[in-house]
Every structure is written in C-alpha cells, then in structure tokens.
Length: 224
Image (cartoon, rainbow, N blue to C red):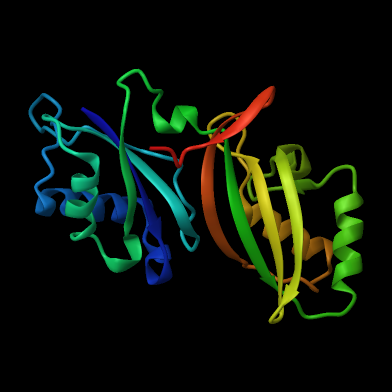
C-alpha cells in the first residue's frame, strides 16, 4: 500500500533544515508504529520519498511525502496515529492512498503557490508595484551569476496591497527540476528595483504544490 501524506510546517519549525525535518518525520513514524516497508540491503531504510524541498525560513501548509506500507491500514487511522507523534507546528493535515503507478512527488511537481510579505519603508509603494508588474521581463542574476527572467516562471501573480507595514504578494510559479521559482530571488529583485522601499528578507508561506501547467490546467496535490 502506498500513501501520500500532507502536513504543515509553521512557527519556529520554519528554521528546520530539510534533513532535520526528515529525521523528525522518521522518528514520528517509528513512535506511531506505522507499518512502513523497508528497503533491502545491509542498511534497510523506510521506503519514503519527499516533495519539493522548502527553503529554510519559509513556512508551509503543503509539505508532502509518499510512504510505502507493508500492510494495509486505514488512511485516516494512519493520519491520527502520526499526528499524535509530530510537533504541534508540524501537524498532519491529510493522508490518502495513491496508486503504485503514481509518479514520484519530485517528478510530478510543476508549480507552487506562495504568499510573500515584505516590509516597506517608503511612500508610493502601490505605484512602484504597478509599474513593476507592467514590465515585460523581470531580469535577475542570482548569486552564481546565472541570468533568468523571473516573470517567465510565473503562472499567476497578485499584489495584495499593504497591511501593517508589509507589502503582500500571492504568487503561483514554476517549481521542480525543470524550472524553479525561488521566492528569495523575487524578494531580492523587488528590493533592488524599489531601491530599498521594499525590503528583504521577506516572510514566505507555501500554500500548495501543483502538477500540470504549460498546456494543461494546474492540478493541486491536496487530493485524497
């Protein structure tokens, strides 16, 4: 039996590295006595695979991992068993059975939805953002000298206005091994274009992962 697990990662846990989060989940699976299958070989490991890694410092409502079980178990029972063993800020939202033919998470992910908030320290922010949105390209050079057009990676972009001194953005953009939007790149780019009126680092929350895109509609992973 193969199951897909959706969980969140919030609060102080946003500073956990991917490796720390993996270890936390593995310990929770053992404490919950979930009947997971093991790989063969000298050092058997749980047959588990993870979704798109989350940047350290970002929160998420949509973290995923797939797990192969050695015997069938009711998905809702598995959710309750596991949820009791993870930290409160890493709660298990849902568990459902998936086909053994389903592509691996990292191969299937093509887009992600983020909320991004950045501190503002100037006036006329709305006018700057509207002009920024009208630009044909958002050229960016990353820390390794690679040039990219961040706007080309976008499926959808909404400016949410300013609240409590923070400019808000809702972004659905390419994610995965082929094309990958990095929220930190966007925060850096908009700070530079605003000449410091909008500051970085920003607060980042990933809300969902999607498959599809390009010539087909985006399909959220939060099925079940």
